[in-house]
Length: 152
Image 1: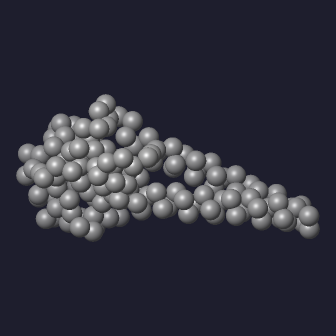
Image 2: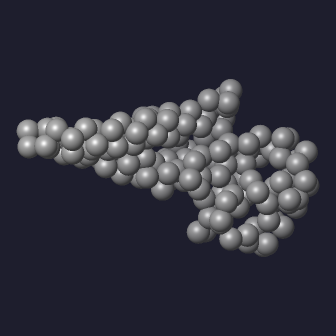
Image 3: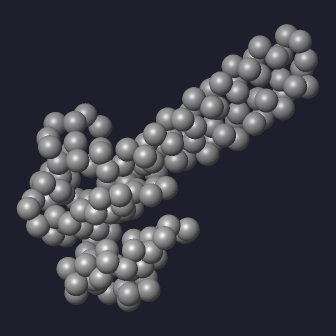
């Protein structure tokens, strides 16, 4: 995505870690593929094993890249979304990849997830906790309370 506004830059800053993981994984599978090619001249079996590992990693990486690129597919008006990221009433939390705008809740831990606030309002507190702090991320009660009050 070509960055044209401050909102787009803010979004790119938010998704920096998931994007870096995707790029790093791409470097790994391409390196394995190159190593498989080089190994082909000395040991075909090693080359086949490395090529298979590279293919599996490539498939997973391509899926992760498509998910990252498609994170905004559900947003009808992207220009408005990026403008909302720059509004004064946007909630951000240092150290946590969570942003709450007028209409959206965005999280960017392992993958980027964009929720409409009207959907999140229907969810209970436990569901909101899972959205804000997925997997093994430690729950921050202060953030949970602020977001609950904001969308409440």
